[in-house]
Image 1 (tube, one colour):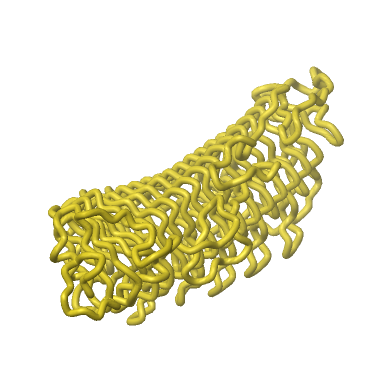
Image 2 (image 1 turned 60 degrees about the vertical axis):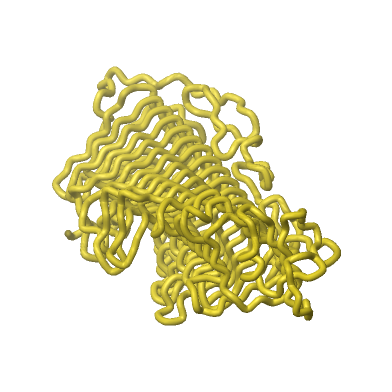
Length: 636
């Protein structure tokens, strides 16, 4: 449709609907500023709010930044290969100390089977004096539940476990198991009969997965180092039955396709680093740090068999394509850092966290298999394209920082902090399945294009700070705080799919272009502050604190107990929409309220009382004016 250019015409003043007539006009009482504590925000009703992560709201391993977020305690530089640090540690360290002696600090006992590849005798019996020379020999001799103690050495073998044992090397720096490629992993833990198995203190590499677990439960993988595998680092599948495991204190780096894969299994990751995952050599697919999905096989995926995972106090960094990918399953992420995800080879996408419906490889999606992510007290930063992406799924974000998302390498677009969309925009999904996000006490800052962007979905944003969004790098446009609109692609927009959003007790500040953009959707803004909205960088247009646009479908906004301050253009801009205002102060804007007829829709401002406008303080009557302002474009 044709859009009007930016033309300044004489102002046409109009009272808000519901105001008194001209001869009854009286000035509202003067607004007396009230004192709030540092970093609290004064609202028009006299109350104060403190958005962002509260001072006591940072998780272990993080410190409060003194403003609205948390900083993680980690070394300044990426740790060298074979060393690691998790949130709360300021120096790199080995995965596990080696102790002293041939068996280090392993808890050996009379039932232990000893393995030492350096033993030259021909009389091995599994004792400390005459150890086995291969891990396979030690496993064959071990009673269920026994400890297999492995001394320093490189073991070129595949270890297949189908009974419960405790397989421990003296430490990963000294004990290496290299997969030969004759089985699916350097260590394979199969069937329910292997439930209760422990693996620790070893380094794994080679021509297969590092560790494969299927059909076994209560498996513990403790302080292992998996690296340079030709396939996935650690893989959990439901192929052979119910699978459950704990991975703790481990390092998975420079594996192929996926660092840790969870397919229909129940897995907890604690104190673990997944770093530098590479794509497959055959087709350059993948490079994901952690992949959590419903159970799948060669015939497709089963949406009735979701995975359940917990990722706690871990670090996912410098992986490719996606740091943490969640499809059709449930995951809790706590006190975890997802950062520096590198772009993939095609689109330049390096998403921090992706939460979506389950989809078959090369086929369709399962819209009923909604993913659900609970992200708490975590940090998502320096990823590419999108920090947190939600598509046809549910996410709850609490006390979390999403920061400094970089643009796509391919075309320098995107760089969004949080992107929530309907399922239809996922490859292979032909159904309209809404996404949903609930944010509380979080900080979204210094991203590009948009801080929080919602397409055809539902959002609740409470006690959250969205600030300092930068323009798109490709054209120096956008740079909005929060966008609520119908879904749009290069092919056009779908006005039949509306977004719904509620923003409460929040701060949106220092945006380029628009503070809040609401297009063909419905939004409620309550007890919040929108301030310091700057014009668009490339041409100086816009700079509206709140802009509401009916673009082929009606838009509406309900604004109550809100301060809109220091807007370069309009405090509240209404383009053919319905905007209801109560108890709101609009302060120091070039135009306090602007209303424009657009696309055949008349604008309506409903005055529900208690509104004031003015500069330097908002102590006058609010009037709307029409200045021929250009409306914002929907974003893709």
